[in-house]
Length: 386
Image 1 (cartoon, rainbow, N blue to C red):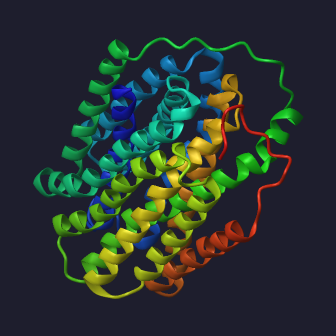
Image 2 (image 1 turned 180 degrees about the vertical axis):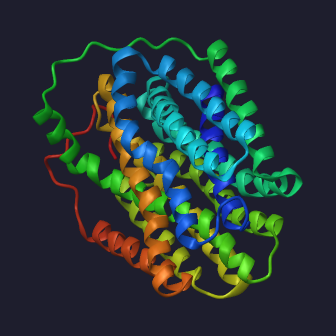
């Protein structure tokens, strides 16, 4: 499991270490909120298009080779900007990193489910999310230090080395998990499965959490800079977000497995906390940054392990890659749409109203989750009660 945790750390550190550094530094082709929103969305846009394809490929050929190929490609894309070192190549490198992450992220999630029994999926995804949160925590902080010391080029160099090292480790340590035989599936069968509330509800919650996380990491540094904080200080402040998520995720997973928390209750509470965090981000100065980061972290920490465990519980094992890829598509739509929504509203008004707009969207989702009951038609795997 450790190389899978390292793969989760890699994608989180790479995505948000760069995102936070872009938001707190006006150099390196970041000249406006719209340009910042575009760079934040580019990485995720590539994932939106490719994650379902790579998830299906993982079911067809096995998750391990897709995982390894994605890690190697991530290292190569990171090295691209190190060698080119120009604003135009920054966009190309971010696109390449997003395409690579679209391969190894759903593959790692599928392997977490395949290598653990269903009764321990909450703990497994909680631990996987914990190490991703460590990447989110160190990304803004260490990313800020690296950019301060040597610019974005040094940060990309570290990512290239990290991706290559995890690829070697996974090659040695991750066992071969052969693809399982599958019944024939038509496009209509796939559409019905993806339209089932058992898929849509956790995926929508994951999308909302990821949107808030991306906005927090990308735009809270802008608020921090307006309050007079430097690059390292804003990175440290935003790391509170990921630190709170890291603390909450394993506990939420254990509570789910032990029957002390249900998926519906946990997801609703997570959405409410996330919306409250975005509302707090509207407050001026350091207070708004810290409160917003902490509550967004708690909310995403609740949603992430519960959402993925629910998806694994309601999916045939031989279709885990496809489901995780499709769920990641929903997450990346949130990851790309969140920054674009906030940037668009901020460009017309102010960043404060941008935070408020996303808070209203996620708060509405929380209300829907609270009042909606799971339809009787949802069927879970034997031995699960989510």
